[in-house]
Length: 159
Image 1 (cartoon, rainbow, N blue to C red):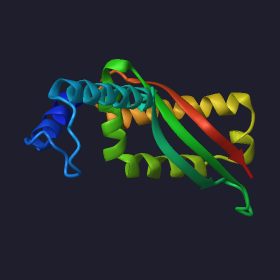
Image 2 (cartoon, helix red, strand yellow):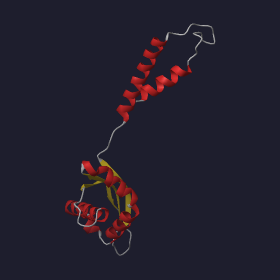
Image 3 (tube, rainbow, N blue to C red):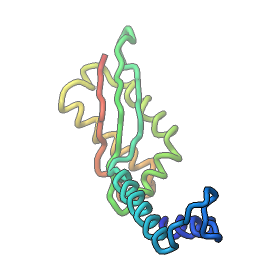
């Protein structure tokens, strides 16, 4: 794809006189074409190596005050979602479009929890399940199956 565009553009821009401005003879068209194709192949290989497709859908960071008397405790977490492969792009699009709604729900949900309710492995897993279920319900209402397989906490800090 990229090769045809570059080669065509370069060949149409080459000099027709067979001489460069400095008076040196240009390589013949076949040689020039091979050189350009080699350069394009290198570029395509480099681009293909950098195009990493992530299975995770980034949600971002959320910081919420916990339900404590002095309001001096908070939970900060960075979230990513995993969705079924066939609907990953649909889920990513829905998350992007409705991120404010999801974040607003999550802030309220977390603000109802105390320090004890967000500490420990059981609480951690319960919170992941609740977020997965509610995000799925909000993004895909009407009894549709939840395509969000997992909620991942890339960071999880309680202060």
